Length: 240
Image (cartoon, rainbow, N blue to C red):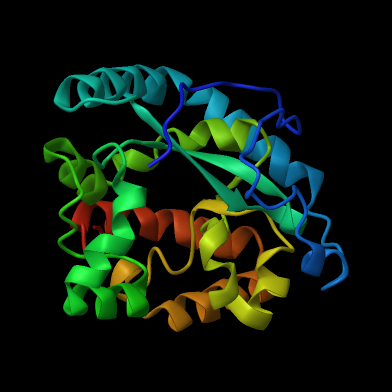
């Protein structure tokens, strides 16, 4: 798992140095895959205002959780991962670290040693009982508080409050033709498949729900998803 200190930059400015094997900022196959989808300016303004007004609530909590992560296990508090965003651009997603350092590098060995885990990963790209999680990490995943730093991604203009969940670079091939729909909008802090079963859904179902969201996107859909998100987080179903 690649770790690095948390760095804030203005919206639209990445300025991040990627390893040689990292894909370019815009994936070649996405340059003409579908027409550009321009979101209403009022949507972006409303999201920024909402996040800024709620800062007194979430920023102190984020600071406390970052300190707790550092005390719980060796390594930085924030985990950074390259993911696809709007128009196929690659950005750095922020999460509270919930796994041991080096967990990403150890995944192939884990799957090779456990056929059941490999089968589960193939269906969901998740492990219900992931041995790489730290003591605190299980609770962060269960409560979804590991996603809290993504409010900073929203402020930087890389994500929206509601949208398809950001696709990791290594999962691009799974999306197939569905990626043309995914790339039309900003990925979201929460989304349709987060409130319709979360990680218990097969991967293909997640892609189908992402497509449905893009096709039916609007204020009504977003408000419905945000309302259902609170219930999903409190219930904890499918969170791991």
